[in-house]
Image 1 (tube, rainbow, N blue to C red):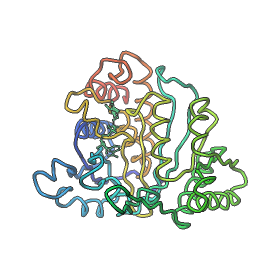
Image 2 (cartoon, rainbow, N blue to C red):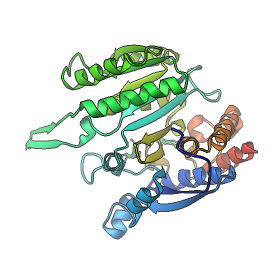
Image 3 (cartoon, rainbow, N blue to C red):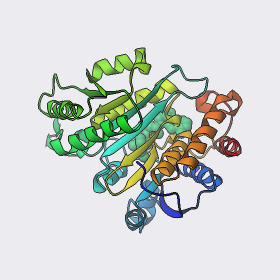
Image 4 (cartoon, rainbow, N blue to C red):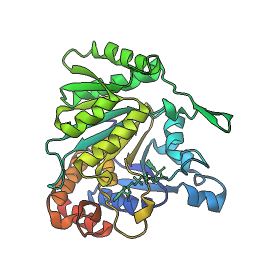
Length: 338
Ligand code: NAI
């Protein structure tokens, strides 16, 4: 993912609603504390902006993204079952951010499973998320699942290349190709073809329902999971549960020209504005962002500081059965940077 040297850079920061502001502030504080020379071009998006301006994104947001090419993004809510379409999905489609990469690792003593260290490669632009839905009648709705050879090839290639560059041993492709023989069949066929170019990487095929069970039994068996959009979304939350919850999982949305880094979790409206959200996921997303712009040393310092912070149960936030607030947790991470 390395794109350049670690030099002065402006990144776009997209702040949504719910806990978005709290965790985004935490991540920006940690980035600043590494001493890296980064400017933040902050833009708002989501329902609050919609209410005030009639538009879902603040003026200049797209221009900022197109200028800076790299963004840190807080979560943005999407109404469930009605209303506007997801801005998150819109950004991934608009900028062709085809690879959603989600590392899952055991950290701290609170994880239910030790030795989890896997990375999910989720296709990010099509599948049932293509948004092709049709009302047939009041009693019948259709949603079209779209899988193309081109998008399947890009994500499969990205997963195998990552396996080689990060010295991983195995890629497991997850589908439901026994039932969806055409769509999932195509994704699987492309994964098989791609695997032939990477003989040093073990390749296995597994159906999504079985994968859910296998992950709960022994997640340490898995290394890289290559999958479609919907299965990747669901498996990510399942994997978050294996290592301590949604407050911990970072992600990167990578395209050929732009990259957006965000937490796996959503806006957590149930805990918003109370200084109790766990900012780890967005802080770790910021670390991957720094890797991406050539600042690996600073990215690594953040990961080490977060691991050190999580290793002490006195530092934990409420979701991990601790009592530290978002701000206190962030201050401890910053003090562990030094
Ligand atoms: P959610 O991830 O916001 O919350 C699920 C549960 O996890 C809640 O109990 C919440 O309190 C907890 N949680 C999440 N993040 C946490 C954190 N950092 N610290 C402590 N606890 C945390 O998922 P939900 O409720 O399904 O979605 C809420 C909204 O977020 C929806 O509108 C959804 O569309 C949106 N969303 C946005 C995403 C994005 O911007 N990429 C991703 C996922 C959901």
